[in-house]
Length: 248
Image (cartoon, rainbow, N blue to C red; front, side, top):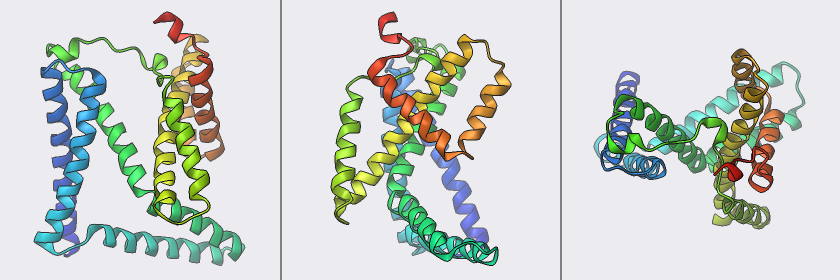
């Protein structure tokens, strides 16, 4: 498969993904489904779409997209490693960093795909509500982002994930794979909730919007800050700092 054909397939798949997700959400809104149901249907549809697409590409073009992605990822890691070695970085530290990146982004690929599918479906749902406000599902009220949170029972999923992490650290079986991918998904969920908590207090203190934008931008450059906001999301599930459960 040449580069032009690969690019064309990528564009086609991206367009098809957008159409599939938004068509599913439109159907949910027309049926009067709740926001959770609309987003959930969209995520499930996208996961099925990914699986069917991988199978079709393998059957029609005789290409294993996952293997190709692994090869490209490894090539990128090798190129980056060579650059840092030339800059004089410690070889042992670079190897540890590369092993960590390889584990998180290769073994945790399923978790990233699921988390990105949830995020994409959520954004698509909010857009479709504005585009089709007369559909019965679009008339359902949703709280502002600053009041979004996870149910209290979600904490049990987190505890279960942490238990899997402990078990997975002692083995390289499917438990380690499941624990890593579950941790990625739960981390994404609590990052989102933690960000809602932070935005709540920034809005309460009437902080200018530019500082909110800078905060979101910093998340991609300061991992420690991202972990801090995830912890805020986790503890808010217990302590309800915004008192939104009392409002409900």
